[in-house]
Amino acid sequence: MPQQNYTPLPQVSRMPQQSYAPLPQANPMAIVGHQFCAPNTIDLAIVRKFWTVSHGLFEVTDVNGNPMFKVRGRALTRHANKVLLNTAGYPIITLRQKILSAHSRWQVFRGDSSDTKDLIFSVKTSSRFQSKTNLDVFLANNIIEEVCDFKVKGNWFERSCVIYAGQSSNIVAQMHKKLLGKSKFMVTVCPHVDHAFIVALIVILDEINSDD
Image (cartoon, rainbow, N blue to C red):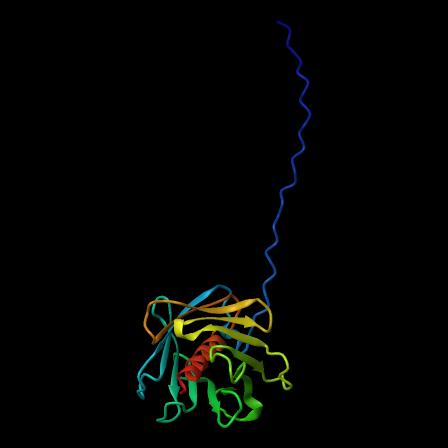
């Protein structure tokens, strides 16, 4: 048989393979330090302890029980200054209650300082006549304090609150309603948000709502 000649089929052009660029990384919301900003969501357990020299007032762990922070008092009084320590016992920030202010007010300083130059942020109740769960947070460079940099809203008695960026609806952390007792708080911190900062807010929130 004579050899048949086959006309080659025209090549079908393939669609170029799409390449997806990674989403731009959010700017870390580093209030205390960049080392406390994780790229992923972090779940924390904040447990209130009876005051002891060795164990402090609060212990903070991740969901697996690994220690992350400890909070101890500076004196043998219920509402004395608080110090947030890392796992090595090094002071990260000092939480100081401001006496004789119109609102319940706390100031947070770097390390174990109480010097104005080391002020990081201040926290106060939104109003003298509103729920103690609603707090306004002002960074140190927000001197006028007309608009807060962060806001805490929720129901402390149900152990449920949300922390927002400024006056926006952007959530940076949330404390969940869990049946874990009044001394344990479960907190979810959003990616790139400073979890040392969030722990400080929860401790201050507990102090304000416990202050009769």
